[in-house]
Image (cartoon, rainbow, N blue to C red; front, top):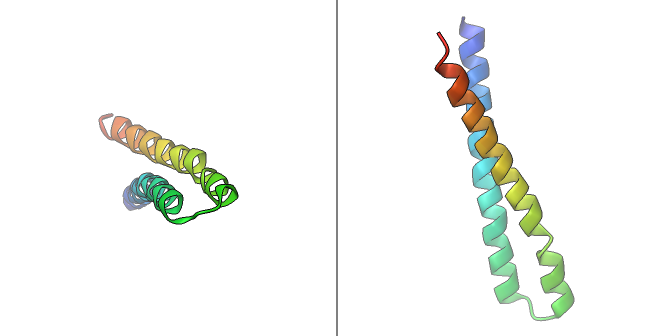
Length: 73
């Protein structure tokens, strides 16, 4: 019983960290585009967008899965 609660807390915290990390990567991309001058540096910064979106999506998916399993009896 305690193990299940600790495991659920671990999954919840991992989901939150992934979602927040993905949003932070997108914010870092915006900052990089505004502050880097050469075009190649801006294009390299654009690589953060799909990775950040993937992390945010993964975090939200984990949080949705956790919320569905807690509704079970």
